[in-house]
Length: 316
Ligand SMILES: [Zn+2]
Image 1 (tube, protein in one colour):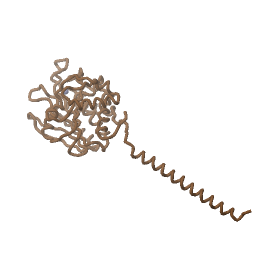
Image 2 (spheres, helix red, strand yellow; image 1 turned 60 degrees about the vertical axis):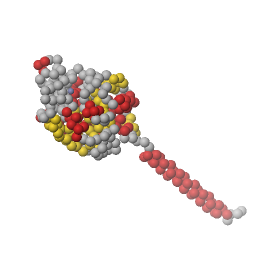
Image 3 (cartoon, rainbow, N blue to C red; image 1 turned 180 degrees about the horizontal axis):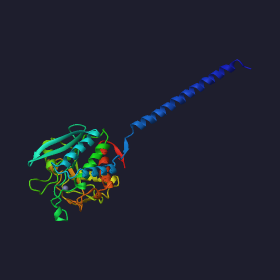
Image 4 (cartoon, rainbow, N blue to C red; image 1 turned 90 degrees about the vertical axis):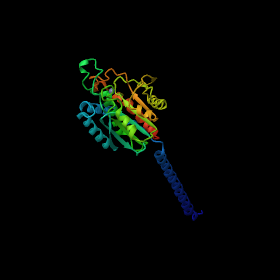
């Protein structure tokens, strides 16, 4: 019956099952390994981190300090608070002090990635000393609360400071002093940014200024003195995340603002500003005129743009 060969055949059969199992095991390990590798090496895509509500709270906080006129108590308080927020968020912070027109200028500079920033984001943190556009002439000698004109830009920069990851291109956030006392005797506009450009030898690829970007009815037109290529770059990012009802693709105003000294120094710079603001330089420039949604639209557009400059895509 050939019985003697039985066990032999069985043992060959067991051996081939073992080989098959080993091959299947190997294939399984390789495919799991491949998926893990593919997951870890795929292009990074994150979701928007900017929190417009938290930025809105920053507007309220600044207004609660009172007017932030250079030399005032509110000015000192907002400075100390900005420094705390920036250090807490992991930035290198310095205050650059200089003199202009007999006034002490204190620009706060937050750095990430070293001494050669590719991107500079700027906003003025001071507020105008006179509400000379107020409908009531009796209010013209009083200071403005500066919820939109001052606090909104600072709020967007501070929230970006909190949410930007470490792996971005080198960035500086600059909080300019003494922007807003033009047409007042003994003062001029943009003293802080003028001093900054004079005292820092830098060659960034892009400078983006945000000013008056918190209006609840936000319509930001392209600004005529801004670098046109950089303007188009930011506006197309806004369009790609459906913020084109806020970033309107038409030119409207020509501004003197903190981008001006950069433009004069041949550094590509733009001013993101909504100058259709009925409460400009009045006592009515208060937090109820500002909205978290408006701060969100500007903040997330800048976040997506900065991350794209850093080789990462961000989904709204
Ligand atoms: Zn102003």
